[in-house]
Amino acid sequence: MSQSTPQAITIATRESRLALWQAEHVKALLEARGHRVTLLGMTTLGDQILDRTLSKVGGKGLFVKELELALEDGRADIAVHSLKDVPMELPPGFALACVMEREDPRDAWVSPHCAGLADLPPGAVVGTSSLRRVVLLRDALRTLGRGDVRIEPLRGNLDTRLRKLDEGQYHAIVLAAAGLKRLGLGARIRAIFEPEQSLPAAGQGALGIEVRADRHDLIEALRPLAHQATWLRVAAERTVSRALGGSCSMPLAAHADWLGERLRLRGAWGEPEGQAPLLRAEAVAEVADLPAAEALGARVAEALRAGGAHAPAQEA
Image (spheres, rainbow, N blue to C red):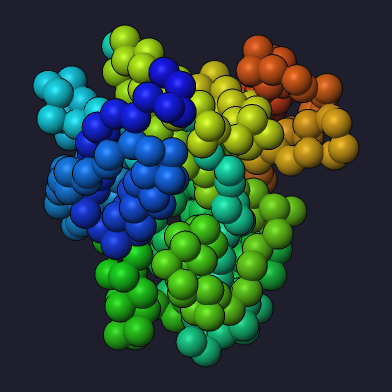
């Protein structure tokens, strides 16, 4: 499929404001290349179950399953995902056709009154939906001697999470900077955590486009949207998570960045209920293709595993 051969493309998307922004972004890029694009909005099971943490109700795959069914039965042609929500292993017959240029992958501290962890009042409550952030926050709070601070679950779409903060249910919440920036809410960010402070999740800030594996026409049509430097980074990150049985019930961080021509990959793992220190691992390599990125990911995963990292008991 060349750029001169336009086609009709239906995008399956969740109906949250952020998901719709992402789908509209892809729609505009495809339309600029001559394709005719429509959106198919869907509410996923992950959007409906808000009273329990994702790790207790089936993981982030709950956000993509309905979209995959739409691809499978022909109601849609492609699905746009936040890549950190995409399971490490796609179901048979599906493929990740494109990884787009990454937005800011870092975590953001959002609070109306507290400039950072050190400014939290006694007995403060911090909200997050991520086990990764729980173990990283707990480690940082332990360093500060702040055993009084509670870390509580925070579910819902971005607007719902911000509303809960504004209602006073939390003193601060931690969100992905990318979503806030994409929706023009960057002013809500009180501080940005550098990776050394809060190592991001695999794929955080990147958009991935999923198709049926047999849709070679779509894979070719999406090729101009791909960003190879981002794809290599997230391939390394996702390999760490995949090798350790990664899911949202895995308190695992993996983040790659470029040091000139070489790719540096850092990983961190913590006990979700334990008090053991965080495990950290790092490796650097020349990476020019996906197999090399995945080999780097395997090295970091093996180093974490050698230090004691493991899949949750129910997944081991």
